Length: 360
Image 1 (tube, helix red, strand yellow):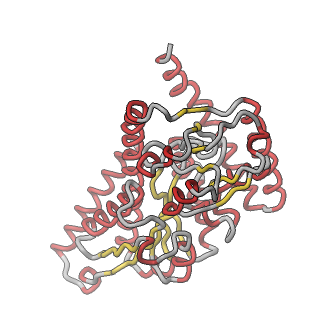
Image 2 (cartoon, one colour):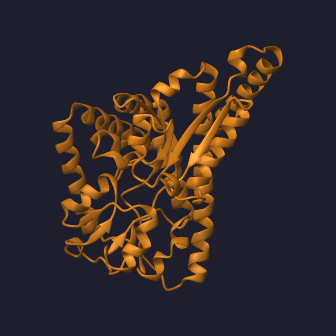
């Protein structure tokens, strides 16, 4: 229903805008605004890059050409993890990246991508739209002169590629792993050594032994990266159950736009985000089937219960510590926990019960 609502809004805005163009010829309606967008991804990067291209197309068409979007990939601006600063400074008007990359700049940004043992995509999107998530995200980003809008979900991510099997918590000690966000903090708490590396450098780092393991996304993107060639153990997820990318908007630029173009801009972002989630789910299902057939040597594993228990205990400890130090962190943590408690009860009786019945 949420998706249909966005489609109807999009159609309505296009119709209204078309009427304005045919009935009015004021300078305001004729003015063209060119916005520059910097993305964290390389040129033509699948799924993630598709989301920005769809956003561009939607924004330009819905505005009848009054909005023009120029996309610069990492190949152009040379800083995959520089998007926050680009948009904050006004060097770029828009960005597309992941909120948890900015925890070193503002710890409260990390909550808006996903959290270990947290909400699924459907739960988290409901929290964003109706549970106060967007308002909390506005509170965090407005301090930096920016607005953040959902930018596309990968869904539940796999736990990563490992060069050796993980049988106990001891096997995680000293493990060099590419893992961003709060999950990296959790892994460090149990003795691992988290490292954040841009997408284009992951395979080389794993192959050369700079890292021992990495998590990226899931079958929708992992197989084409070739990780299975140097790390045969593929673990199921726990750390990113609802990975939501983000569109960033420079607030000064945003408020310089006419109101109808602001609405078109954010609507185009949300619609492309919903389409990215559908694409991610489709590609994951397709590639999982291909993986089982074409790469039978990949060993799909799940951490043992003692490992999960240790990770969950570390997660809870770090959340409590963060909440005690930062009032806004506590507000966000409490909001997510309260909504998850309600949402998970429904997820368990609806989706989980249904899936359990189908597996018997």
